[in-house]
Image (spheres, one colour):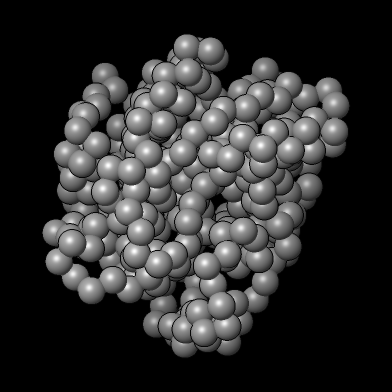
Length: 316
């Protein structure tokens, strides 16, 4: 599909691409992959809105990107994805302020946290990784349609292979909590959301992609200890499953998904290592499980998500 692979960096995939006149919004942009994604898009000429929940960390990240790319237009948007009231306020602010949006990179997330609840009572990983981004993206749809053609990039993970989404009890009200299972379910939800979103927005010129960035040591791993890494290795299907990438390599697939000319006309797919992922195999940690791209399951998740956020969306 492309000439890039797991070793490719953001500098490699953005080489020769101009984003002049385009506006991008990146969530989770106060550290790690989010900052690198924002910096790369800004360096290619895009205006960039960096979003995060901590105002001090966000401001520091904005200043870092501005220092790296002095000619870039860089703005900020405070939002806590674990609070749907904050999500609604941020989306309203973004649509009112910017009007048209061309690229949305839903990069933020939490991983393997203890059982915690969002402001509205959802399990933290499902509520933050999926529901917060679901609501934010749907509320931004008017701006995305106004800016079409455009793309939405949802960060999933190879961790989706830990578990299919349980649509009967996504918030662990009736099950014993397993943090890695819950993480896997939230990452499957990210992939399924991509399928359903692409079906709705593709007729309007906006395509959606799910991305596995690889394994990168960022703040996402703040809840992990040595036992967690051992658990991850035990659940993995190959010895190199936890091979580490640099931040520049980890953000490369997100940037490729957002900008690659070879992805024109495509959408609703799962990407890894700057390639369209193959079907998962039992003896490999690479690839995408069929349940994560199941159109019928994607529609059921969409309906459940609308129910949980108490809002329906139509993009006609």
